[in-house]
Structures are given as C-alpha cells and as structure tokens.
Length: 413
View: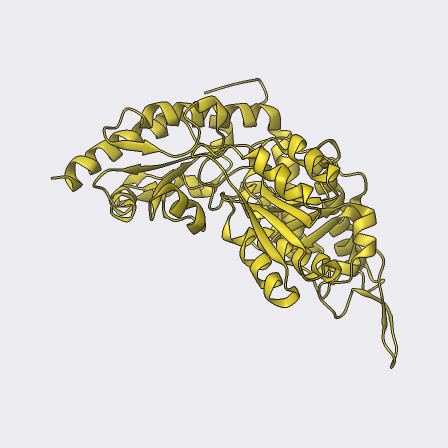
C-alpha cells in the first residue's frame, strides 16, 4: 500500500527488525499498538550510538562527553517542542512516561488547591488519569467530578458546563483519544469552555500523539502529556508540556541533584525551567531515542502516516462488523474513530480469544485496558482491542478478522 511518494508501508516495515519474527512459523501480526509500538532501526541504532560515542551525565560537566550528552538531550527537547508546536522548548519536561507526567501535575499543581476544589474527569479516562486525582483527594480534601458520556464517547456538554459554572473546578483532565472507544473529544472546544469558567485543562495525549497532529497553542492546552513508547520511541520516556507561566509558578515535583540553583544549610533555590522539574540523572539515551523517533516520523511522511492509519482503522471497523454477535464499542461511524477498535463478542471471553490468536502470531489486547469505570458504564467486564500502527496493512487486518471468526466458531462449539 502506498499513499504518497514519501510514505510507503513496505519501506516502513523493513525498518522494524521485530516484524521479521515468526510465531509458530507464521508471520507476526502486531495489532496492539495502543499498548506500545515497536521501534524502527534508526531509534535502536541511536541508543547504541549514544552509549558508544556520547555517554556522559548532562548539565554536570565541561568535558567533551558531558557536553555532547547535554547537547543531544537538549536537541531532543527542541524536537519534541516542535512536534507539539510549543512556544518554548523549556515548556517540555521529560518524565518516565505519561503516567509520571500526570502525577507530576497532580503533586505540583495540587499544592495550589484547597479543600473543596474539584477536578473534572470524563468517564472514559485511563487509570493513569484517575488514580493520581484520588490520591490528591486524600491529601488535599479535593473532589473528583465525573463528566458523563454516551456509549459512543460523546461528552455531556450541558453537565460539563454545569460543573464548571460552580467555580469549584480548578482542572479539567481529559483524554485526547480514548484507548477503548477510539473517539476524539473536541479538545479546542473543551479547552475554550474550561478557560471561560476559570479552569485549567490537562490533555492525556498518550494515544493521540501517534495518530494526529498536536498544536498545544492552537488547543490552548495548559498541560499535555504523552509517552514516547507509543510513538515508536524507547520505553521509559515521557513528556509533560505546560505553559511557561504555569511551570514558573509551580513547585518542583522531586528534589535532588540537577533541579537546584543552590543549596545551603537553610534551604534551596530551584533551577530555572525546565531543569526545575527534572531531578536526578535522566534517561539520556532513551530521550535522545525519542527525539530520533519523532524525526523519523517526520522523515517518513507524518501526515501521510496519519492518513494511512486512519484508513486502516476505518477498514478494521467495517471488517469486524461482519462478525456475528459482535458489539463494537465507541462511535458507530468508522470515520469518527481513530487508533483502535474495541469489541465484545457474545459468548466469547476476550482472554480466550486473544490467547487463541496469539498462538498464530496475531497480537491483540484483552481486558479492561486500565479503564474499569468505563467498562462498568458499558456493562461489560472486559473487551478485546485491535489497534493499528504505522507499519500495519489491510492484509493483516483481513487475516486477523478471519482468524477471529474461526476462533469464535471454535469457542462457541
């Protein structure tokens, strides 16, 4: 499949060593990209190159290796800032993952909250965007407000307006792309409503970053987070974007080396942005790899890649709909979803289905996908999820759907 002179899925696939792997003699069909993505050769090579040529601690020395490592890390920061259309590179804070980035906001922004203040969440949030706010509730006597949705993931805007109009909601924290429903909330509209009522907004872009162009200035996001491993970068890398003014006003998340300007026997003065929020030695090689992943994405036609993956997920939705007794979660219109299709099949447990498929080299996800409140709302305990990446093809989806049909027939006797 070729969508432009720049983007060619065959060329893309050859850049991922893991796709050569066989399972029981059959080709690997990896459709669990919402969980993690594989790494192109250029990213893998960047890790070896860093440790072979530039390995030194950052911001801590004036010798050649320390300077080379610092330059490489800061270059990656600039790349990520451009990726998100941030105003300044120092608005980018490196973390372990999106989960840690949300926790950073909960702990640091949480210091500005008082008892009775509220955090608004949608019913489709990942546990990483739920648990930190419950922990904050316990520490600060704040409260979580749940924004209702319909089964397709559409927000109840009248209820949202009602919550916000109370003046108690200090932060609205919402997914940019549901990891179960595949729906895309209208972020710019939501941000405008939140700000009109004095609330800040955090966007969990863990799923969105690999499937749509993000412009934090256009959205007017106060905070935005994502994980590097879900956009073809190394594990252990995450990003927090926040507006400069907000970061300047918030206290550090962690204390230690690297995040201070000075320390005395009386106390400390934190460093300037972004180092104020990056205590200790960061995962420099992995952060460099994240920068390489973003540049690789650009070099291989990012816009065309998004179009390719969108076409795949619409195709998967249509093909899965042909399976008897299937219930597809989220938008009924394939064009209104992105990234993933989750489903439940009457009489078939997701764990049994994915185990059978896994024996044939087909990788799907089964379970509650870290969204237990959402699954309870939908009236099910678990679902099966198919999620696409830049290297997937229609042919792989065809094979997957046919094997699902065979497995369903086997399981239903």
